[in-house]
Length: 252
Ligand code: NDP
Ligand code: 8X3
Image (cartoon, rainbow, N blue to C red; front, side):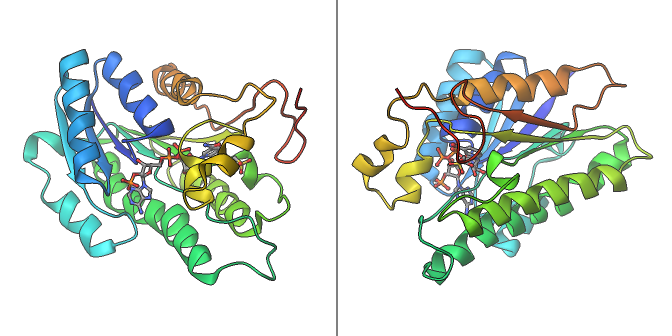
């Protein structure tokens, strides 16, 4: 029987790793991101390597009209989404809260909070109708406590925790499960994006520590989805061994 996972931000890092992991488990995939060319490359790779069906959907999760258009135009065979992975997100800048770039703040809030909400609002009603589904939100250790220069990003990930908890409460009378995955340091394009393309500064974030990989997070996502129906993995904090919290990291 066809199983469908929709993954936002599936062209890089954690989202791409989830796409490969779920394809390996036999899921057909709706993969989304803003860059059409990267989506085509990813779709080709997944189809060739795993033999699953892949539907690339190019849109910006911040644009409600575009999200609605994408969801409304899904072919009938792709509408019964079993797993929604709300992964698209980013951090921008590492300035003190009193000196941060307001455009960066708006981008983080619009992507990490509002984009996740739009996807949830448009996909979860179908799950409720079918009485079947799983929502995985990619939160962060950053949502547990603020760190220097990270106030707004940390606030967006604290919001992801509240939105995950709230959705779990609102779905408690259904079989639909909600999981908030909270990774620590994962080496992806995250820091390159945060530092606006400064690759040297980005590389320093992972110096002297073995960071997590996207695969480490994808393993937990698949574990949560494959858990028996009566088991709801509500929240998981996943840290590198030499990271103890958002700001406590032991580097060699
Ligand atoms: P990457 O930068 O490697 O990947 C981000 C993905 O999201 C890309 O596919 C990107 O594609 C897509 N994306 C970004 N903005 C939008 C948007 N507005 N609309 C649609 N797609 C978008 O980062 P990660 O894999 O590291 O990050 C994934 C998630 O994991 C984020 O929510 C992040 O906050 C979270 N996280 C990351 C950690 C880390 O250390 N790396 C730790 C904890 C959480 P495109 O640019 O083409 O749209
Ligand atoms: C990403 C992890 O600690 O760099 O959410 O904010 S951290």
